[in-house]
Length: 188
Image (cartoon, rainbow, N blue to C red; front, side, top):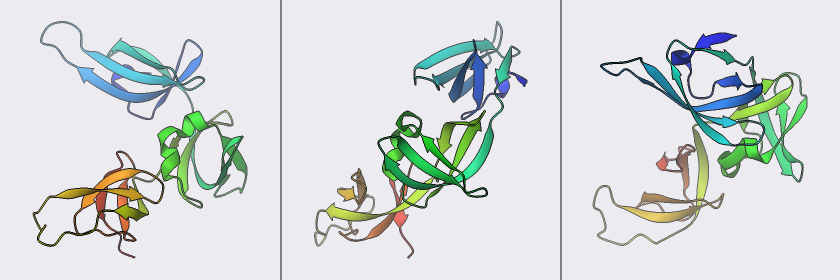
């Protein structure tokens, strides 16, 4: 399916020169003089190589047909990450390079969205927020009540983040998966 370059968005799968790419960023430029362009940063799905391409906004780009399906995470082994389709109970194995940095936030039973192209998983989308436990942080210091002050903490998945000074070890917190930042104390 062909689309004009200015319609490309993050997460779209495009086909260039017979290879599939996932769009990381797409930005439209409209200079005062000259032709409007679209700058697209992409990652080749086959080997993970990142590339940057500039199109005229009216150029036609082949968008690959992908289907998004809900899968739940089962486990990780030497072959990769194993997921189960929520509707058909079919299992798929996703290579580590596709999961990438999301690996540290995957939890058993977590429902994710996998983009499937001709039976092969090509990209993954995980929930924006996850609940994790603080396993190590500095103790609360009396009198340290300044609003907006943060201290380092270690999460149960091994990621370091900054949390407000009132958070203690053992507290469950909500973390943003995009950048690993503290959102709020978990409500459970």
